[in-house]
Length: 321
Image (cartoon, rainbow, N blue to C red):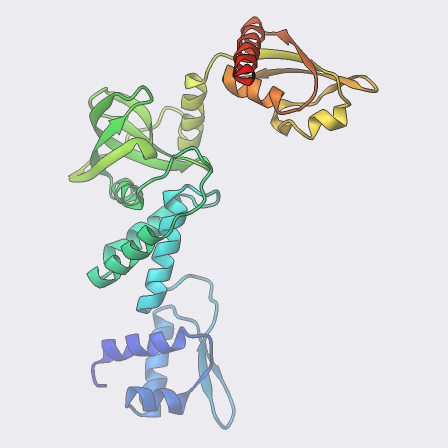
């Protein structure tokens, strides 16, 4: 093999397998002399690859962990496995898969040969992950297009479906993708509305990077996650001051309520009370109370008391039928 760049790539591919390679075996595989192998090893070290040599009658070489991450060479099966794993995690916003993972997916899919793209899509379409049940799944290509636009500072066009179902066309300057652990959001400057906005990525379709570059604007808060948290807080439902008494021990009730609702007050050996402020819907609060499976009395707020009364009437009618 006389082409030095091609030979270096072949050598690197061999060294990235988890074993030690005798110099004579590397020379035989690449059809060069042991002296050429030694020179090529030196070239790889100059490029930042930490190649370690062992001494002895049969010297060997292996790639070890260094201080920086050098480029990796992947075979077809490895590339497909990584792409499918990143797509699955990114598409369903699994906790721990953050913007860095989406950037990695965008880089990988950009260089995947068409034959491997087809294999990745086939595997993706043939599997059905267990999600959180809120239906907020995402086409991984939507994330990768957005991630590329964020990194390249390109204007982005896309269709957006609001919470009330209204469909609009948007053009924006994407700033950051933010994961909350179960949903992805895009923080961007909306050119049509001349202001900063957050967009749920599962409501985005037909994203298109226009190629038009832009100079990044300064975010009002200086931090995308903080800006998203404030945006979500402004859209929350009015808070409910919940006050409920349970005719059961506190240990029994706390085991059946989410810890996020706060601590229970003991009112006796077989009684406890919950006083907390929630921003959840009446329907969700009523359902959680009913699932405690004991007698309880709702003292407030009035809208919760009324809703529980209506719900009880409907359930009674349903049981009578």
